[in-house]
Structures are given as C-alpha cells and as structure tokens.
Image 1 (cartoon, one colour):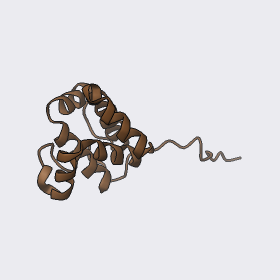
Image 2 (cartoon, rainbow, N blue to C red):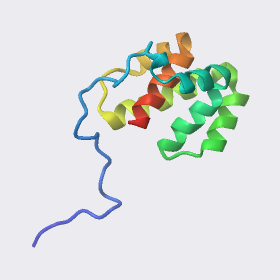
Image 3 (cartoon, one colour):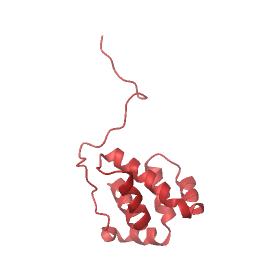
Image 4 (spheres, rainbow, N blue to C red):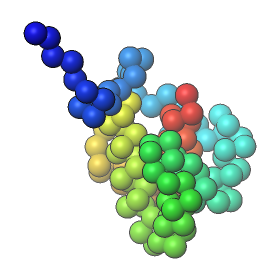
Length: 117
C-alpha cells in the first residue's frame, strides 16, 4: 500500500534553482527603472504587489503599509522573511530588519525582483 500526500499536506518548497542568494543585490535598484520609480514614489504599492505574490491581499497590505508607516519596517521584515523561506535564501530576521530600516526602497525592489523571476 503506497502513501500519497494530499494537496493540503504538501509543503511549498523552494524552486529547484534556489542558490541561497538573492537574484539581485540590495543596491541593484536600477535593474528595473520602472519598478524603482514606482517604489520611490509609492512604496506601499510595491509592498502590496509583493504581498499579493505571496498569497496576501494586495489592497489590504497596501493600505496597512500606508497607514502604519512608522512601523512599516516590521511588515517589511516579515514579508522579506517569507520570501527568503520560499526561495531558500540564506539570512535572518536581523538582516531583514536592517534592510527595511536602512534601505526600505532598495529592500522592496529586491524582493519584487525576486518574486518577478
């Protein structure tokens, strides 16, 4: 008798091409100038789009990010951790937090570029 896991039991695993590294560097903002401009002018939109690709609600995440701007780095840190887990990227919460505290736009762009490819 063989055992086959059901759809609910299957865990999402990193893509087979995962190397433990981000596809774009933290300061590779200009690899996608349109995304760079969008994120610089309205980071909440990029955050919402990233959250949507992770299974969240784009509109809700965008609004929460906008109206909690003084603690938006906490939300960013959380989503960055989800992206790292999904793609098998090395790092930790401390690095995620520093990226969002010091370089919010760069971190959001890097995450968007990772989710795009």
